[in-house]
Image (cartoon, rainbow, N blue to C red; front, side, top):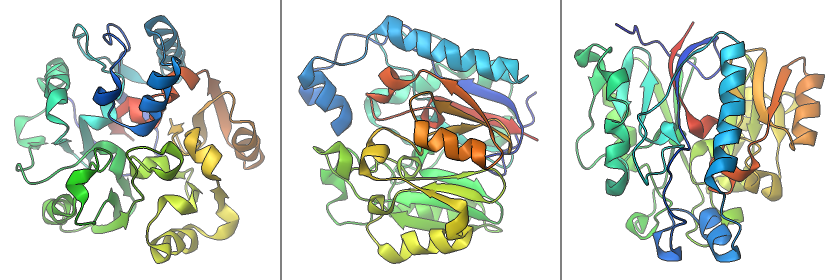
Amino acid sequence: MLQLNVRDETSPLKAVVLGIANSPGPIPKPEEAYDPKSLEHILAGTYPREKDMIGEMEAFNSVLRKHGVKVFRPEVLENCNQIFSRDIAFVIEDKLIKANILPEREKEFEAIIHVLDVIDPNKILIPPEPVHIEGGDVMPWKDYIFVGTYRGEDYSDYITARTNTEAVAYLKEAFPHKKVKSFDLRKSNTDPKQNALHLDCCFQPIGRDKAILHKNGFLVEEEYEWLLNYFGKDRVFEIDSEEMYQMFSNVFSISPEVIVSERSFTRLNNWLRDQGFTVEEVPYNEIGKQEGLLRCSTLPLIRD
């Protein structure tokens, strides 16, 4: 049996579910797009091709294996985009929480049944129907669980609003010993530079005490300021709207010292090296066209 353990975003990674890019299906029609960046590339004729995405994911897979990580992959479902495994479930401490995702994506969860079968069923939590939640919005960090949400009364109007206030309440109840802190995120169905699809699109802790942060992703300035003060301005790498659009905050930590990043993120990668990190650069630009990157593609199961 797998002994789940994820208490933060950066402790040494031992086991992970990495999504898979095989058989993602035809290019979606504009009305089928789940987010504004995918829509932009559908309309421009630049939507990513299967073989390019497979190549990018295999580069990521090779880095994970090089660092001794046990990598699980979903079973391939025909004509189904299964790249973003963070959307379907996430682990906090020794519990795996099933995401309440867009109904069309329910089968993606069933494609990791071979992983679920080696987890104690009592450690798998299935939130009730009113709870909308996706792993990209949830970050355990020390005493906290950081949660991205959208509090607007027009929540149902946004296909980009994935985690609701009921989810925040659910996590408080499920983890009463944790401080659950929520952040109201900026949403847009049409403008990818004004849309924080998930919390990890505008913020991510790295190392032991640092973070990547984008101010405009937050609707409430005080909540952005709280994060800035919590980590300290000198330990925060601030990204602009173009860098947020390119997904600079969606890197992935293999350990407190090792970060996987997109090879074109020159400004970020140089800063990370200046801070003492080992940066594993991979090509991931094609996958990024779907408004998800490295963190989105992973479902960590065990961190030391």
